[in-house]
Length: 447
Image (cartoon, rainbow, N blue to C red; front, side, top):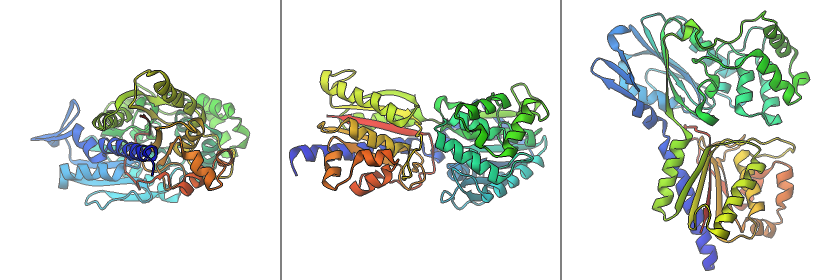
């Protein structure tokens, strides 16, 4: 192996180490325990204290990929003080728990298991009264997992709408606007069921800007979207005529005021609701930056709010890598450029992949032939699209290695088949389920 190849291999190992540091920083157990403390007479959650004597029961509910370790943290903290609990997690993301029942369900397209778990949650909180404390664990994936179809809407209807939205390139804010208006649990719906109990939401953010009413579609916070917004999103992506008739009917009834909209700020159901953001993308990026510094790289965190079509975002970030190499701006090599957020992919092909793998493939095309540049794009949840990979890693020699194996990168990109491209090169980033989710991490190393 040449000196050049040795250096690139070392940089690839560094990239993986930086990504691993980002994951460790948003471990759900640590995230919960940073913000939730047991004091002599109760719980301290951020700035709020909840005295045990004020409550007859403590209930734990929630939905999301990080639900199991978040619940384990509460079990470690509260033990037998937890009276009952139900959470819904993505299939394969469960853990053995003593006081909280777990339902594993499908993500991102909902299934019957999600409905069963959601109905148990709603029944539990509906039975709660003024002297009950409900601890609600919310994390990424919760929108697809907390499945409680609104009256007149079936699971099949929700599945069809979800598939249309995932394929058209809609962002998470737009997707969750639709979800909230087709659900009894989302968009403040859980708060409605739980009123007048006290509801404390512990939230691990997986959305741009950490908007509480978008994370898991905001089951216990006021909703800022309306039925009008729902219709607008479906028309924007030209899919209004393709959604099921029952969905069209519900939205039309909502627009006419026949159906009540989701609860808004000032609604009485939120009088006893509190929210604490316990984990964010910027926390992951800061930890990644510290690891990069430790490995000898000058480090710059550009933003935690990246969004847009993956192929288009790549153009900006790879241009920065070229600028580092060419002029030493915005910092000189060795450099680590970090970003976070969540891109989208408009699916036009029949391949297999995810937004991070497509990001890496588009980066490989943009940086072809450049020496000592490595790109890694990975989802902090360990899952990129319908694959077992978190993302992929690429460098300036990726396309040369691909051509040696008769792999045409443009063909794979056109088909949205980045998974099989990187699988053939053994360049997938596979972590297994991380049981956390604070969107994605993009890093570029330049030496």
